[in-house]
Image 1: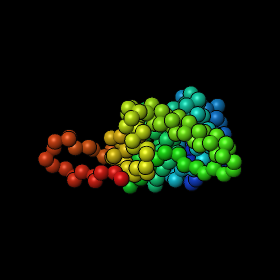
Image 2 (image 1 turned 90 degrees about the vertical axis):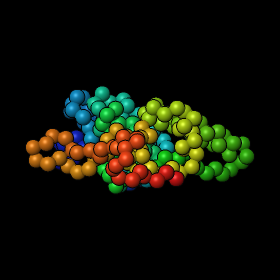
Image 3 (image 1 turned 180 degrees about the vertical axis):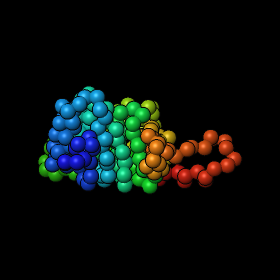
Image 4 (image 1 turned 120 degrees about the horizontal axis):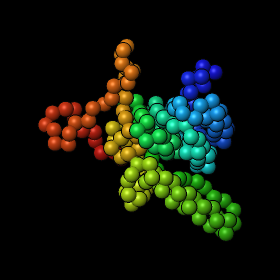
Length: 201
């Protein structure tokens, strides 16, 4: 397809085994074409299966090709982890995107022992995912654990400050410019500039 020729992979919609299989196959194919030219992963996802998301995550880390991530619309739950897992300095969001992080959720049925086994598994996944967020954001683990305790919604600038992404794009570059323009952050004590974003919930 034209998108693959341009080295573009789309993670659009809920993350499940079917989407993960397609994205993984495309990542491996594009690496076989060139392990130096970056892959551009566009994300607009509410999240989904933890194991499917981790399969995509592991493949992103496995391929030699740098993977640039771009959030359009939303990157929530596992979608936000994939956004953060892009190559350092190459994680982007458009200005009206929304990013959300939270702890994994699930349900268990059956005998008491089976429920206890499944509960321990989801707690293990929680610890594992918290460690991955800490790795890619540079935040201390206690900060990650506190942020993940409940749904936390972030604007692109807030997500940038938290370490989930590197650049907030304003619009495509005008003719003759190679790089898109970025949102310029005001110095912390600057008396001018736009009002600060309200605290994330």
